[in-house]
Length: 416
Image 1: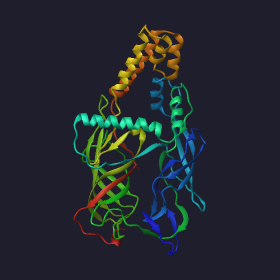
Image 2 (image 1 turned 45 degrees about the horizontal axis):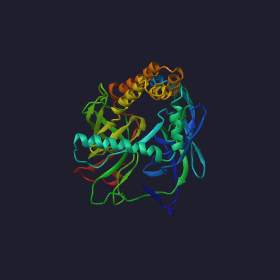
Image 3 (image 1 turned 135 degrees about the vertical axis):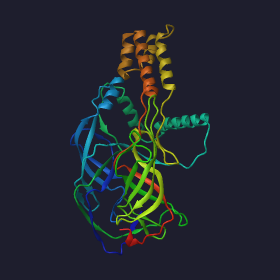
């Protein structure tokens, strides 16, 4: 990052239109029009290679509109949930600085969802099918354990109960993220000049970590190998000698190196792209070799990133869920046990309403039918639905690890 030199004179800062903000909600909020929101910057904002707003800066906004979430509604109906799910449109109108509240004009955003920062793991040796399955099972087990051990257990348990009901209140969850752009120039209080800090990478290496945003959507559904990819550099990159090597506003030029669209029977898409050139604001270019090393994605996408920069969907399909639900549904047909207990265990479809109906009617056949419906729905959702494509929307935040190829080092005044 960078630090301010307190002995240097303060400089005026004017943020120009087009600057992209990525923020995340600081708490849960009811989903209703006019609801005030507070969110924190997930990444710092730079202006002419100087730090203008640090990561964590608060912004104030509100919900401006609600639109139907047809996909969520349809899925919920099959599970007996009649909640009219909505997608919130929000707008942020102020930056909350320690010294003042600065009004801003921005685009509206409706991409709010809890986010996950993808990071490429270190290269791993190839393993057998059984070893991969064991690793996957261990991850699932760890996730189950974290449900009980991570902070916020009470809230998570309440949400599970809510989703068993035929109707429940909607909300914007803590951590929901939005990406939007500034539409008008915004003057900030003057700040001292920024002194870049040394990168964490040792001086003998040539790797640079570049933070950028995609200039257009890239999707495994439509992308083909060789298609161009461009990303805008949003943070300046300094070398170990405090020299600016990639200024803010540069463009990374690359191409799709591998793409496979989603297919039937739950087979998900795959996507990989890399970069071969950086074009500086003044028009000069330099050859680089870069691949995706991190990204900011909605947790609902379930993405994972491997050491080679390939993005895939996490495989959450499980043969155990349909099998277990089938076994439980069959319990209602056993005549050698307690009727109430067996019908209650068997009727897993339609949430809490399904259990009440299965127990109240005292019908083994009805309870078994509800249970077999739940098993069939689980089988369909786990194995028979089409797979999901990888979608990187416009303005998505990505991290690129690059290394310059053999080309002359440009002077600082040639970079701008």
